[in-house]
Image (cartoon, rainbow, N blue to C red; front, side, top):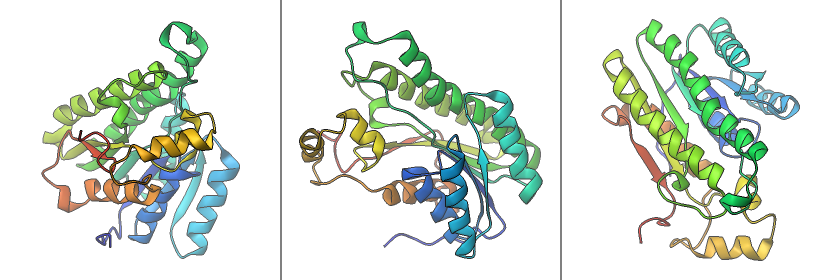
Length: 255
């Protein structure tokens, strides 16, 4: 059973919120009483997700945002503040997987796409979130990194590089802003049952099963398990946790 939180009066922003870990985290924030801004480049999906949260009694709005675009990110944070008056929590989750290929066969277009979303997108979001949180005197940011950000991962070099970068941004921002009342951390999901995990093996069910079989727990994680880690990192229970990349992987990286 996950712990429960009272986030009444708080405002959370989640990117990549139309599905998977982003949607699960947005739902968890709403269930804890926070007002939630769901952002995604897929406007139809994120609008439908926000409607479901509102129908369940939550406070939520949807914002279409390409996190690679600084102006769109500024607008996204502005919408959150204009609608709900502040910004307390942010989960920078939007991400894409690289096309599987050895480094020498990877392309400039794929590099630009993956780095653009996974790294520059997080940088864009953090800039505007930190400015708002600094003005109001505090907040908590969690970036979605990956176990791939702590080690090499053959075949997806742009993705691996982007996630190493996210961890570096997280640790640096944490040191820069902790004295201003802002805690910045990251989560490192392992194999989680999402579309990105299946993209790694190009939709091959047997290859996916083999990947899951390498997890000591014997199963893939769920989006809800990642959401639980994010909410804890934003909660008072993690008040002394700063600049950490918390690995949630069923033991995958222990050995």
